[in-house]
Image 1 (spheres, helix red, strand yellow):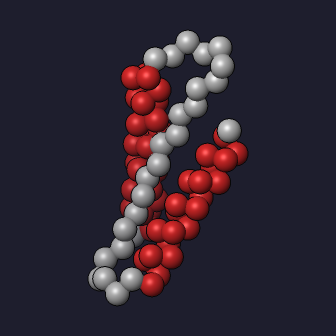
Image 2 (cartoon, rainbow, N blue to C red):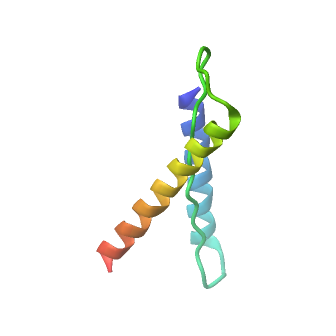
Length: 72
C-alpha cells in the first residue's frame, strides 16, 4: 500500500540521517527515492512503471539541489 511504502521510505531516510550523525567519515550520504504504484485494473507495463519511479526520483533530486542552492 501507499502508506507502507511511505513508512519504508521514511525509515530509510531516518537511517541515512542517523548514519550521517554518527559516522566518523568526513562526508555525508544522501538518498533520493522515487515511488510508483500499480493498482489492480491499471494497464501499465513494467518499463512504464520503472520510468515513472525514475522520474519521481529525479524530481526529488532536483528539488533537493534547488533547496541547497537557496540555502547557500
